[in-house]
Structure formats: structure tokens, C-alpha cells
Length: 195
Image 1 (cartoon, rainbow, N blue to C red):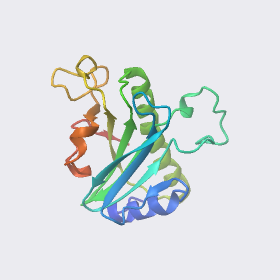
Image 2 (cartoon, one colour; image 1 turned 90 degrees about the vertical axis):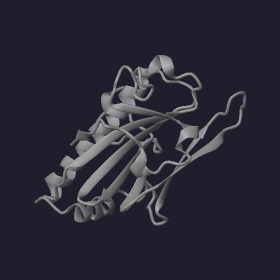
Image 3 (spheres, rainbow, N blue to C red; image 1 turned 180 degrees about the vertical axis):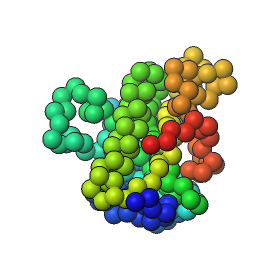
């Protein structure tokens, strides 16, 4: 049964294991935190990206768990063993959005980024089908893909406008420094996948 966007969003949040939810959106902003090695350092630091939003939202850290996403499938080197860093689900107006995020330091090696975000898209589609199969709850998800880096010379990897990956124009690039004044709603990505 197709549900209203707000109802489907609430059901989705209830069905996902709390172990994966890293921010429930109760503050009106989503905080995405990732450990990384700063240039020239042997100690990890934590990078935090905060994205205010309209409507309702919650975030999950898809790659924050060592166990397989599908524990009944062999995870050794298979396509489903890949995953993007974060998925943020948002309900605004009559739409349920999913934002896929991959955090990188300097590397913009396209194939790795493409594979991880494609896996995130496949995970969203699988999640939707599993929920529908068991509950009958259904709603289309509008999915956008992003990669954030601190690469100071991303031009060779991007399209002529300097916004999207040249090898996959569905992936929008942002430098971490350019995120400070943006919200989840103002992140630009005209390429929307519907699952």
C-alpha cells in the first residue's frame, strides 16, 4: 500500500535498526562525523559536517559496522560488500528523499567513489523492496549522490562546470569548506535517481 510521505518516513525510521541511526534529526540539523588522518598526521581526527534541514530527517552510517549488510550473503569481495559512508533520509512536503554521502580526504579516484555510491543506491532500493515485501508499505525514494573532499585541485576529475564527477555526472562534488553555509535542502544535485 502506498503511504503518504510523512507516514512512510516514520515507518522507515521505525524499521531501521537503531544501531545504524547516528542522528535522529531532533535538533533540526544532521551531523555527519567521520574519522580521518589529517595531512602529515599519524593520529586520527574527526571531521564533522552539519547540515540543517526542513521537514524531518535522520542519518545512518552505512559503513560504520564491520558485519555484512546482508548477513545471509557471502560478503567477501562481492558488490554488496561495498557501501557509502552515510545515508540521510528526509521527508519534506510530499517527498521522501535519500541523500548518499561519501567522505574523502584528497582522493577523487572516480571508480571507488562511483562503486561506493552505486552500492548506496542499491542498498536504498533493496531496503525499500524488503520493507514492501514484508509490510506492504511503499513509497518512492528520490536519491541524490554526493562526494565531499578537501582536494584543492579537483578540476581534472570534474565536468567542465567543476561540479559533477566527469566519469559519473550523477555525483555532485563539494569541497568541505563550501559546505559551511549550505543546508540539506540547498545541496545542489540535478541528477535524481528514483527507486
